[in-house]
Image (cartoon, rainbow, N blue to C red; front, top):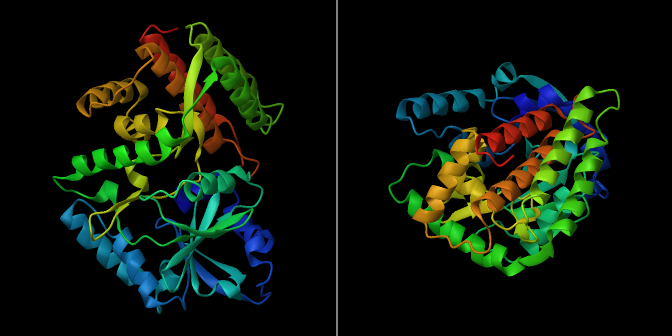
Length: 376
């Protein structure tokens, strides 16, 4: 999520100051002296004027990419111009003061975490935002560090509220146009399934699964103000979906460690045509098909659930992905529940001005879709 969108939902500039001041990564290296940083909200970066040219060049490379040659040309010129020291202050949307020990870093805001680039461009430090849940660091570490994934950046070190990972210099895959791109994605899905999903599969009863994650969702809903009518509607919609799942004779569910947002926007392809999956903050235990659904269905592009599921089942057949034990209806219900879990996590936080609006929208979309396919 870009800084321009973050500013609409939270007091981000105050959050970043509190994060820098409280995160344990800086406990032995904190300078009370402040320096100026320029914020570019539409590029989603915050830079100090003394940042090395190598870092700026890497950011220019990534942010000026487009499938349209003309658009890429214009973006390239624009980004190079706004990074010129003399006029960068003029193009920046805001200037903020941050501790001087961050002078050699570039900052990239995110949903639950803040990424900071070092001048060497060899590694990235990921900081948990102030007041965000520890799972956005812990689950990430458990998924990557414990599984030694060949297609993910290596975690170099970590703490309770931060981690350091290797820097991946590459092209965002959703801006990459190549005749071999479908094959590359097929290979990546196969790797992801082999190295993470199949390795961590577990069978649990549907009752245990729903009870566990119902509690998780209720804790999130508790963050919403009591006098907010959305809260009652969300709880009602959640209970209806759980009742629907229980009424369809699903007795067991296969769960596994998942990325959670396994889509093209979180993939980089380097000069050797190697694919790397980034942004593991949503890693968690889910229905084992969830990551494959997110990738194959293009659901993150906003195409709607009906088209997303149509595309998913079509590509499952095309890629010859074997699915045993589950009826089509069961798969749809379980994936809808996982979509709800993901969107609750993205939409509800004590840092937000208002929580729950998008969760209500997601519930309404799921209900409308399930009605349209005559599941409820």
